[in-house]
Length: 368
Image (cartoon, rainbow, N blue to C red; front, side, top):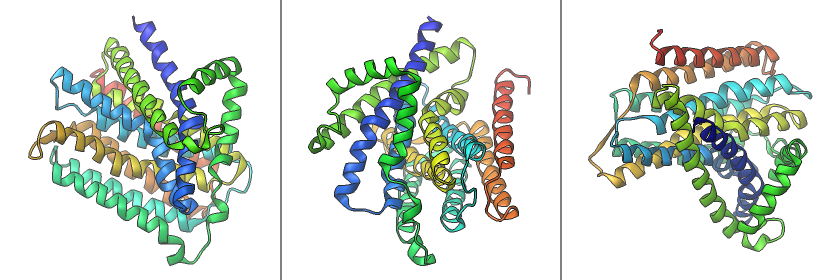
């Protein structure tokens, strides 16, 4: 049984990557074109939705799985989003620093914007979790902060008088290399899978006028696959005696962030590291401010507005502290090296992530 669920877990990771990249992102590109919004706003909103869709639906289905078990004090859904944020900051920026081939200079104005707002996001998350409980009215602050962030992204280049449009790649160009990598690495699996999906989902390259249908069907399939991923991850982890919060912080968080990791590696080889770093930070801001708010909002709809959500303060506050510490390390490193992305930063971050995983495993086992 554990072997079957392990195979399902790996398969869902792969299928999610194909749906997100081949179908979902194409529909998002057409939506953004219809709305005629700037590249930066597109990446901070629609592309953040793309990269965060797996963990968002994973958290939602984890929430319903917990409802079914009668344990409404678990933090697996929050753990998935917080754990994904840790993976994005530490592992994705590590990969960017290691594989980058071209100019390693970082344009400080957009990166500083994202680091500042991301730090404020972490502070808001810490403040919300501090009393062990979340209320409906506290979640309103999350979505209000996300709206403020979009406003800042839209106007930041005007306020600081710079043009970053040329450094933001087109969505199609971003995924061209990633899709090619998946095709050449798993060609027969790719062909078989895409033929099946083309029957279910309108191919956005062939049916451009049906982008809304592609969007909706992609969302539905991402939701279904996320459900199977959660169920399989929980079963596998329970067989190894792993706590639910740790499942979200490690297995589900890493699995749902794999598409982002591959994208960042490819874009780092084609452009400089600005977009990879910003993509990781944009995704994290969306995950925390909108993703957590949306999951909590569903919780309050199922119960009532005056209800409270009890969080696993010990595990989550440690992870939040790690997020803030990582941001400080990144900022200090950039300042020290005058906004250049060095491989040394990457190895520091991956060492922190490995230490974090080991600490969580030892904590669960009762060693620490």
